Image (tube, rainbow, N blue to C red; front, side):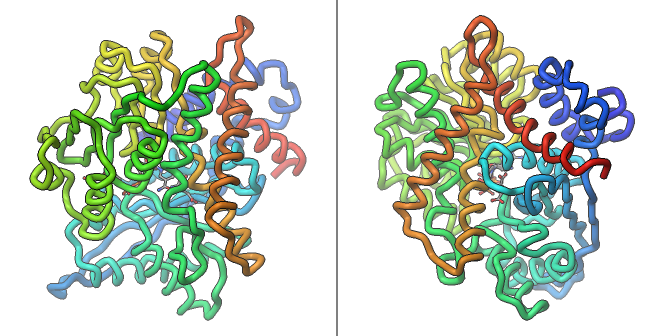
Length: 439
Ligand code: NDP
Ligand code: 2IT
């Protein structure tokens, strides 16, 4: 870890992500001489390559704007680089390196042949017109296209990148290369998207939760959940929780939280999905629209009592104080819909209190898993039915749960899902790297 810290100064998110994996696998790899001789740990913490580029675009006032763009191709030992693009002002190389590192082990857990990558820009889509977003995406892809391809690297969405952005990016790739090919996932249905991709991450996280509860002889029906965020992951997690007759008590955005004391109903959820996905409004508007929904400006959801917490917004959103609140309210399950939403000290506290934690690389793997299925559909020029995809997603999440439980079983029979996810995700990538010799 010291050498990782020395080689990556001023990259706290990346160091945090590596530290988490290292803590969990260190005991397990201790007597693996083959890994040590081949320097697998040192090699796996160094991205294959990072491309950075300037993205210039013109806003609606004809002012010239300059942004930074990146693609981190972390590891392609088990398949083409695969992972989303994030457009958000907080994006920098450390954030993208941590996301690409996480993605490598997450993709491995899905059982599909996908390596790990991530990219994005410090561009902020909030408040931009469609025309501005289009011009930015076209400029971004004009740089990115030479580094990606269906057998090379297949980006998708993440924070700030949804179907609208994927459409502009895909159109520009097609225009420049003259090729229609499955170079991005998360596409709309009219041009080769998958029926289940929008829902897959949120639904998958709830399927994982259901498996964890089953293993503890508990039912999801009737349980209460607090969710942060109101984007792709949060709103489809909420939808699946309602399908399972659980109660959703909160949603949020970066301005504040809404609290729904009696639990979110379907009409409210559909209205909020339209607000967020179509009108790109703020979550506070839901409180203006509906009686029974209260808005708490500047607040996070973590002080509301519930059985389950689902952080579905961004990294490090549950800090030690938030973890204390969760424990004080007897939250039993934390399901990480977002990537690395829990700080290291919060994680330690939750583990110490016996909270059952579904780690991000397992719990939110449903999205990239269905992206993998979208790649298969594009390669065979077929479109698969929703029922088939939902059943595959259900099976993949159950399989990931099983892998984490098996690898995460302690000598005393206790289960540590985070340790299990890290070991199971790591092993497949490390073994493939061993097979290739020194490279
Ligand atoms: P979206 O852009 O659709 O939604 C993000 C949500 O989180 C918005 O409500 C946003 O609020 C909020 N948010 C973003 N940044 C912050 C912040 N700094 N503080 C507080 N709230 C914030 O993104 P996704 O739902 O796609 O992604 C959310 C998380 O899930 C990320 O960690 C991502 O890596 C992870 N994930 C996503 C997958 C996917 O398929 N999309 C797959 C696997 C993981 P606001 O509008 O105010 O910014
Ligand atoms: O973090 C993630 O897994 C994603 N943003 C989705 C990646 C993908 O390629 O679908």
